[in-house]
Length: 492
Image (cartoon, rainbow, N blue to C red):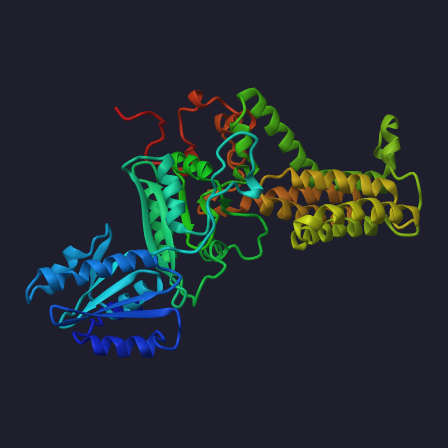
């Protein structure tokens, strides 16, 4: 309601009043980056408002030259607004009538032309946001494939997607979110494939966001959209690869692009979306299936290997004689459960240190931690060697998980199961895993069952999870997204 009231505030016909408004509300004259260029065209005052650093100065200079020439080629005219509209040589020029819209456009990096005697202004898109060039994301690297990835510029990100899907039904609906930040957000989908109800729900939820600003961009949007609370499991998938984004659009997903973020939000998703990696589809179906199984094994290991081994430590009589050697062969004064937690937390220390350590020093830090700290901890009796071994295997399983958010959530789940096993032993393992599965089965991501197609069970879809099918054989889109058109086929 507040935004509707602001749109009714007209632009004053006097450029002096507009200038005073800009000085009072926007900081014109105080903020060095807010600028105004004043011209006299056909005996009328014309002002350009812009923000240095967000505009392309070359465009502004070129447009200024075009408008100044009007004095040499035109006579006094009452149609100055139409003349300027025609002379602004740019592909994106639109009129506006609201003073608040004028402020929003200027602060978004566009140039606004205000003309004496008119209650409307002209907006010219001369944005040139600072940022980096598209490059391959560090978290989604491939051996073979495209090397361009999303950046912090929403215009470039939508362009990278449209380059891959040149369909006239591809839509990018843009809106501004937050009262002070006024961040641009685009909803991407393919009309005729995406579920219209899902698109409407996402638009409604985004429009209802009331907050000062979203400097953390996509993560803030996710928390408003899904109201996740303290559930650690990711309910949306993030990607920085344009090819992955395009693939999900063709499947019927709805994507959310947030300006200033290189990550695109994919909705809706299940847990199996977080277990996939683009490398599986850059290899043959047989190799891709093998890679997928190895990845599933790594994820399964990261969850259940440590609780299972710890149960055998507590109840060694469950172990067959042939593998009785896997238990700890040395005794220490520190309980094994404490060793496990210390080692697991130590892995987190290493991960955080690797993030915060400059690249040139990170390799040396890892070497010191692995060789010196690990070996010395064993020699002094702080850890038994088996604890270090199994913690290392579990850590590799975590690193094999494509989704960073899923890996962290699995770590928390593993620690919870460990605590239950330490208290209740064998019944604890059974009950802990059962509770874990039930909690996952209760999760919904925009009304999508999180464990689909395992729960509820869908045999054909689950088979496609286990086996990477060849692209020509995948003729149907996933049914869980409830797309308007399930069949993948060229237009007739």
